[in-house]
Length: 111
Image 1 (spheres, rainbow, N blue to C red):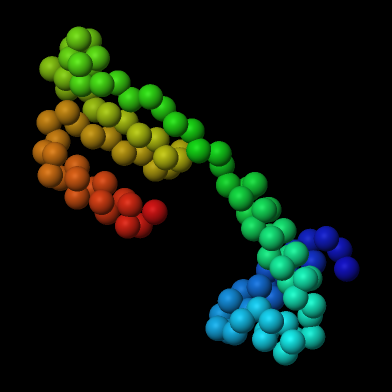
Image 2: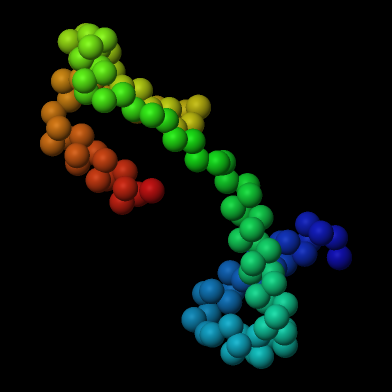
């Protein structure tokens, strides 16, 4: 069996196990799979998944004082947040804080 085929097979097995509601030991006994093999593949697939996700990048945001000294607050320059090539958020300086708070809360709930 090729490497890709094994990855697909074990991804399907792990999904079936998670959907079953059984403990790992029960599911493995029923499907005649050693628990150690199951935990190995669970760990391996989680590692592969975390490696494929892009690394988080943190940016320093200027303080209100820094912005005011540059005059950016008085200008109508939006705060731009680029999530992907196709997803962009622009927040205008005159955006009501309540609206921004609702927006951020909504993003947290759907992240």
